[in-house]
Length: 281
Ligand code: AMP
Image (cartoon, rainbow, N blue to C red; front, side, top):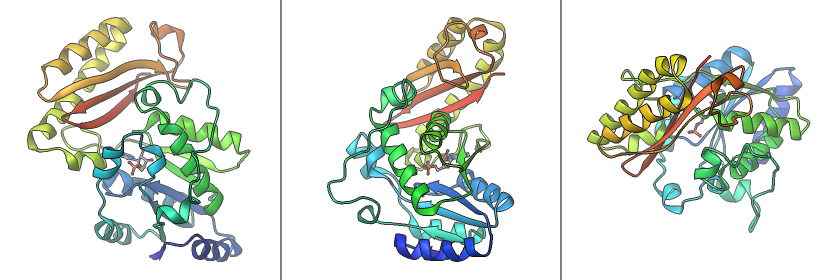
């Protein structure tokens, strides 16, 4: 696996790949890699000739300085995992390489999409995500980019971004990988202590239990169930649980008003904020 920290070196390498008429797949990550990330690498390797993974903890998508500071970083372990997964190239730039000094977060217009759910709880988060993804897309110019369905709203933002960029990059959404107790894998899980990890698993099980309720009862009943059950779990506070139109993320009060719906949750377990979702139909 080739490792790059400089944009110019990576681009020179990718020019050679393109000259051989090879397709390029791109997997952006913030590191502290787990099986979920590696499933994206696998999907890219299956669909493309050459896979580039980036590891970059993007400061502009953190609205909370302490969250950015405590975000797990383990570049040596990540490098080994990517080598083992047969990833072709790793791009690990410093912040100074990605952004000009005093560069402001670019402005994007995503309508309501970046103001609800994660956007409401983490103001400015999706503008930061769009800024870094746009920068990566311009540098790497992949044929396809692979994102996890765990970050459901992020995928919709990236698809909207690609449209705004008039870009032909194909956005592929990959399934959520879970631990045996149902908890969606996340780099943030490493920050949970033993008790909090058990609580996080209990949250994932509530998401399983609410599935049949959503199918048979109304939205309010499902929301009340989740809210009451989350309150019973130690160390855990509900940020939101919503049932939304799966295409627009419009929050629904009557699920029959959308063809396809998605249920999304965000909880604090201790100080760690976790998200999850499932497609209802
Ligand atoms: P992150 O490093 O958290 O920014 O995640 C990088 C990419 O991996 C994003 O597209 C995430 O949606 C994806 N991802 C994170 N966790 C999982 C998971 N449990 N299953 C599948 N994809 C995931």
